[in-house]
Image (cartoon, rainbow, N blue to C red; front, side):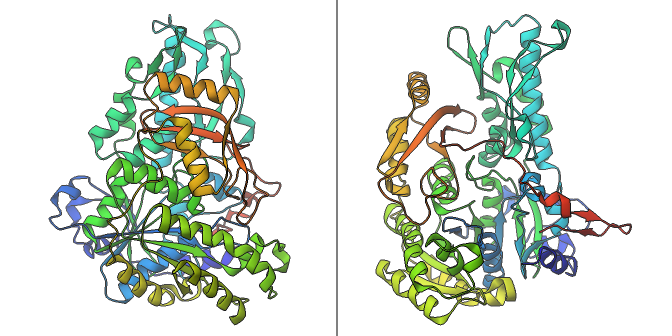
Length: 558
């Protein structure tokens, strides 16, 4: 797909004033803090003041992603538009993009074709400054840690056991491991350090899981920044940093409101990656969409083994939110890649490759239906190269799981291309979802929770904890953190921790090399395989094609 197409479509859109978009949801101007004509933050008091029952929550997830593309965010946006096309009061609740992928390889996160949120350039580039505020709060805490050590270290912080890292919202592998405090005692205490990308920061997770400004500050206070020389955790509250950090986040906590190309309201707030973080937009944005609309469409990052698992096992557990229906997005092109075809071969019919790749879809669907016990529909994102025989094969194999499959054509036709999907989802929302359950119980220990996800969701035989991870799990258990849910950081390209194992691999183990606690967010983090919390740029980064002309028109975004 030509990278310019999406941007051209977005730039050609005649947007409505953001006050008019808010008005569709009954949100008056007194609650709006406008950032120009087409973006606004919503005051948190709006949640308490809207006197109506919550709407239905619809989760959009996908198969394991491939370079062929699946269109999960595009489908979520198109579905919200489709629901409005059939007369339903709908809104979207989505994540906001990180600059890392925008200038790297993945691109932005505003959908595609005629199913986009706008203003596309603003959303992909800084937006309302939320991610920068998160980075500032993160790095304030880092600065206060090192300042405390330099001025006597009253808390007896062990400089070799500081777990809090600095962050920047850019793919910069050079910063993964650094040595700082160089140049003598006037320049700090020399120690090993490193940067994560901002969207992997615990501050991002805290912002996305906080229920209020007070809850945000309380969560900040619980952050464990490292350990003292006796092995005891040292917290943000002991450094007296939480108040100043909350000040930096006072505006960032407010959800952002924008619109789709068709004028559907869209709350875009928070953007943790699902491969290295918990992959969901903020609880507050989701609650606002549910409170203001009859149907709230949200999405979770990457495949259902990552974003959906974390949405259901972490976000729902923390907030009490419950989806009424789940949409699993797939493309025939991606399924053929899972079946072994090269990207250059995808335009030709191959029933053999498709049949080999479909088990990836079936495992994701089975997890939603049989592990989490939620109503589910497959949205087959249609491409011109798809043949009737290929479509028929996907439908036939999905019938084995008694799962409906609907063709979606939102990229080309926007909400009209999601009309059937919207009608199907409305029916699904009327089904009984009271049987919803988590993948694992709170009472399980850290290793048992990891094993439960590996076995029940990934389809593996279990997890292997390396000695360092075993030691960390034992320590966190002794400190009482074993009852928290677990956030597994692993490759998005496979059910396993090996990105080359496509399809639906079996009889594999997942190697966990490190376990740490995000006490403020309320989960432990298990790093599996070679996953990095600071991505790198590709050999030809997207930044090389992004430009702006003398009239301020941006090109090259996708």
